[in-house]
Structure formats: structure tokens, C-alpha cells
Image 1 (cartoon, one colour):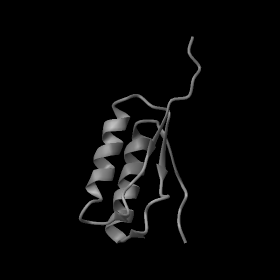
Image 2 (spheres, helix red, strand yellow):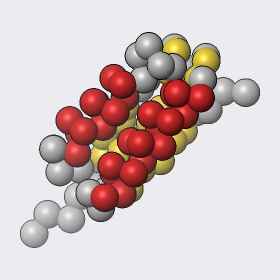
Image 3 (cartoon, one colour):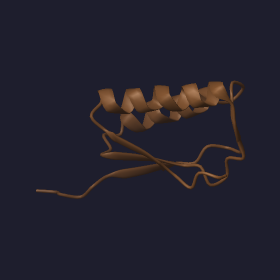
Length: 78
């Protein structure tokens, strides 16, 4: 029996906005196919997020929840 927690960290680029936000959703969908337990979105390098970027983030969260995968964010900048 394997009780290891499978975690995947996704690091968006500097700008999470309408022009490139779909990459986040696509990456989350790809990771969900890998049967992970937890997805961490690391915002360390993100310096700007617009309303569409927030929409992509919420969409990713919903997809993870529907798949029964925990979804967290970290390293949010001021």
C-alpha cells in the first residue's frame, strides 16, 4: 500500500492575464490526468494578474475540485 501524497507544483509566468492565462488551465488539466492529490500554484514569479487571470485561476480551482484534487496557492506578491 502506497500512502505517499502526490503533489504537483505549477509556476505561472510573470503575467497571468488574458493573453497567456489559458496556459494555466491547460497545465492544470494536464496535471489532473496524472492522478495527483494536491496542486500548488506558486505565484513567486507572477508580477501582474488581471481579472481574466483571476478567472483562469478560479476555473482551474473548479476543475481540481471536480476531480477531487486539493488546490492551493502560495508566494503571492504584494
